[in-house]
Length: 312
Image 1 (cartoon, helix red, strand yellow):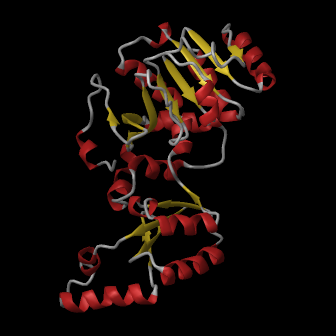
Image 2 (cartoon, helix red, strand yellow):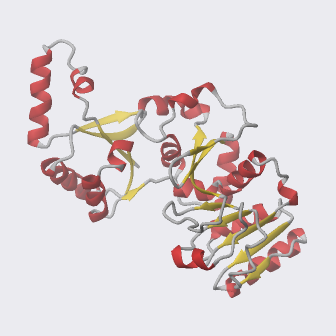
Image 3 (cartoon, rainbow, N blue to C red):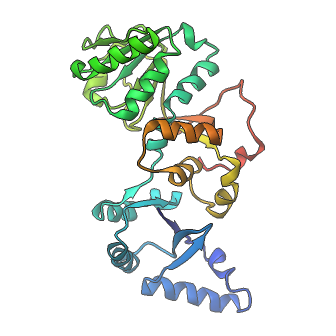
């Protein structure tokens, strides 16, 4: 994992040269921008590239560096995630930019718990719907976790056959019956909480939702567009950084906390191993974000004092 940060603040750059006049430090900064130079630093034993600006020369040299190092997984600062030129460059280079979705997916059970607690509605009394066309190992694990906690678990899909093995396994292990359906009108209409793993616009439009249902969607661009719907579209979250990574959060200021944490634990392993690591880290959700980036807080949750340091 390589970290890339845009430090376009001249004052921060000049603070690295305390023994020379500011006018000279400013000239050095501008010279770096013109020549496309960037710094490569070691931060917490992690490689961090610091860009002075995003321009053609910087991106050309970064492309050369990325090709030599065969860069693939990268975590970038917030100001780079919102920089169109850099994101187009990243897409062209086939860079896997950490966006928090991997962590969001692996913590879906905790998100469901958070919503239930926030609404003061016992999860064991609720009917939950899961929207999924393409089942994978992580989704299967999340369905097991969620179905064990709720009263009724409905699965809406176009590929019901792929769920047969999972249905049998959940029934044999826990005596729980999954309601797998292809009926868009009935499958979710009584569910107060809907988890969307991979449904897109047209599929969501065909669903009949409860008026006050909460939609938790892995795709931030997908939301319910119905005039009579009074629920919320939950698109992302913020987590409390585990104590063992506290120094990393300070040294990587300007990185979204949840995305930074994702980059620190991201690996190719089984969902159960990831779940075990999350439990050991005792990761807590601080708040949710809807599709308009508005914060949704749980009034029943006592937040840590570090909340004001988290980037939204």
